Length: 196
Image (tube, rainbow, N blue to C red):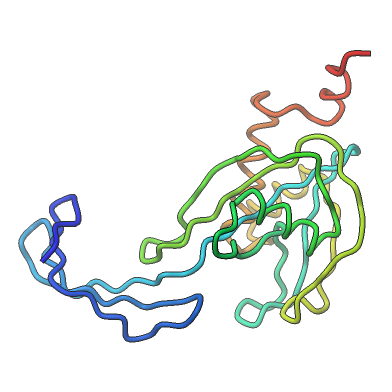
């Protein structure tokens, strides 16, 4: 028996399904109100995604046919490999999926995507210049295309359901708010602030 905090007690934990990157947990728990239940949740590898903005103000979105979700439009991103830092994963995924390298990244947020999942999504934004190079797509990313969107149009797509994956929509909205509030400079503002 183990107290897990918040008044929850775990009596036993089972893992009926475990693979390299996925696990289902079935925990026998006592809730804070004293009732006993089975609490099921997923353990999935953490991810990283990037809002990459060019000097002209457009941001990179990637479009691919997803096995579960059909035609998806999202930020470049993917799974953080074991022993890989989130920022390193974000830079790697940006280069692999969009063929873009960035001077540096700034964190936007770390979020949990589902109540019954341990997965964390690390959201970043690029700062400085972007360089376009070669993409290195995985088999699951075959057919992935890169689209450069005006931020206002991307915000609309995140708000109207065109971008259906929560992490991408959240990243775009957080980035737009950071620009609006002045926490992040637009490319033009950053150029003006550079000493001559």
